[in-house]
Length: 280
Ligand code: MG
Image (cartoon, rainbow, N blue to C red; front, top):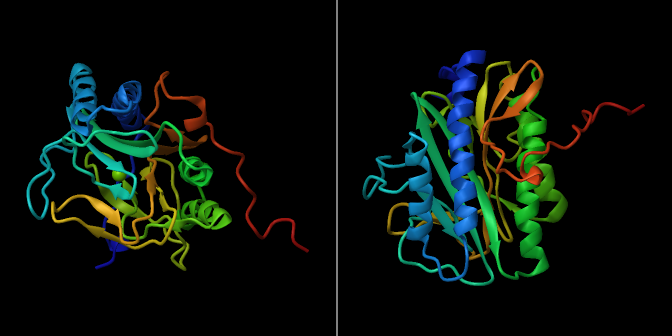
């Protein structure tokens, strides 16, 4: 059964406000991680910072207890360094100069989920690595800008993929964006590449996690023996960014934001007109 056959749950305006509360907790937790990231800090210490921020806000970390092939997940964050893509397990590893660190976290407030991720550059990195980090963020924002009522999920995918194509970056295909609400992962799936079909129509009340994962190399990934950590097969550096959003009558609204979210991470680009416009 394809995911199109399953149910997509649209949210009311009041429910979206509740999701924004959870989203704010995620944004503040990531901001706290950002203040703690420095050479020498361990990924377990960064996880503790996020966990504490979520608990202090009266929220529940949603990643803890997620079932896996080897073991249930036990951490508030996933932290992916360098060639790790997503689902990196926090531990004793120390962050060093020249690394890129993607942190993904989720929180539940009153049964509603927020899910977000961002990537930090620690110290100096080559220009193309910096471009990878910034372009993946910009692809996320371009995908969000395309999520307007009446458009199609495929428009989000195309907007994201176009940023990767423009720079020659790999687009991870094995992991995709998703619906979000009372569950962290709901229908529909949102690919970060064109699938050949335009997909479901985007309606007011649809809530999505938009999460592009780009690489400096190919798209192929594999899971390490820990059962969680996803790394690129070719060892190329990879980056993930993620916002949870709600589609409103006024357009897409980013839910995983707070006053502590830098403007560059929440400013939507002007939406490009459809390719058919302006042609003779
Ligand atoms: Mg997600």
